[in-house]
Structures are given as structure tokens and as C-alpha cells.
Image 1 (cartoon, rainbow, N blue to C red):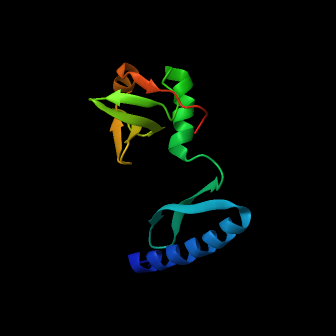
Image 2: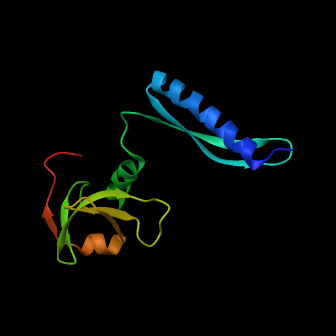
Amino acid sequence: MMTKLQITDIRKRVQAVLDAEGKALGMTLKLGNIKYDDDGFRTQLKGRWEDSLPEVCADYDSHQRRYDFPRRGSVIQFQGEHFQVHGYKKRSRKRPIIITNMGGNQYVISKDALTNAPIIQEPEEAC
């Protein structure tokens, strides 16, 4: 019978091996959630190239073309402040757009708020 402590130990050991192998491959490898029962466990393995765009940025780029959003990196005005468009949270339905204020704090807004916000500055090149 497997216990939570055993699963935690297994996860640490497997993640250590994945970190070493991922570094050799130039990738980031992560274990997802682990589900277990009396006889065993299962998990998901996620991998990304180290030089690839973060997932929220890549998701924003695909939605930007579909919904005619401003380009990633654009500076918009929202509620009297300037924010930079950063990314897209694909699992969020109400407020999927990630924006960053000039102090570096991240906030989320709706698609409508983004399309209605005035663009202050377009990025010179892609982020």
C-alpha cells in the first residue's frame, strides 16, 4: 500500500533525475500531479525547450491574431495607469489577459477590457 510520504519521496527522486536529463537535452522537464492508489501511481510529464517562449506568451500570440488584440509588449492605458500586455491564461475564462504595470506587478483583465483600452505605444519588435 502506497502512502503520501512514499509518493512525495518518489516525486523528489524522479524530479531530480528529470532535472539532470532535461539540462543535458536543453529542456525543462516537470512532473504533473500524481494520482496514486494501493498498487501504484500515474503522473504526467511536461517538457519545454529552454529557449522557447513561456506558455502564456505563446498562447497570447495565437489569440492575438484571432481576436485582433494589440501585439504582446504593447503599452495600454487601463484605469488611468499604463500597463504592458504580457500574456494569456488559457484556462481563465473571465479574465485571461495578463498585463504588467510599470512596477512589475501582474494583473489580469478581460478580453473586452483589452480591446477597449487605448494603445499608448506599440512594441518596436516582438518580445
